[in-house]
Image (cartoon, rainbow, N blue to C red; front, side, top):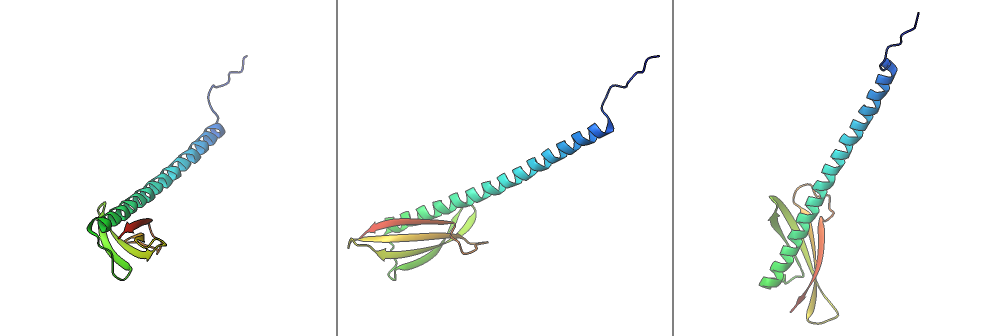
Length: 123
């Protein structure tokens, strides 16, 4: 008589394969979550940079320098509200002013600016 062996996987082999598959899926889901969070942060930073660039351009174009050397305001970009703060300081060159602008999201700011931009203004 011949012994016939069944062809197939043992229960242990199937369990190990399922464990490996489960670990791979968990890692992929975690990676997707991290990528989504990074994309949201990059979008936030891009919008804040645009707010800063637009604000400096508007100040230069309309010659709206604050008399006290400090100003603040609000802007909307990407269906989101932003706050900005401007500091105007003199430079070594008499007719040149330094404009330091910081942009913060109106909601959820931890005190760290989302964007900073420095520009110069010729009187």
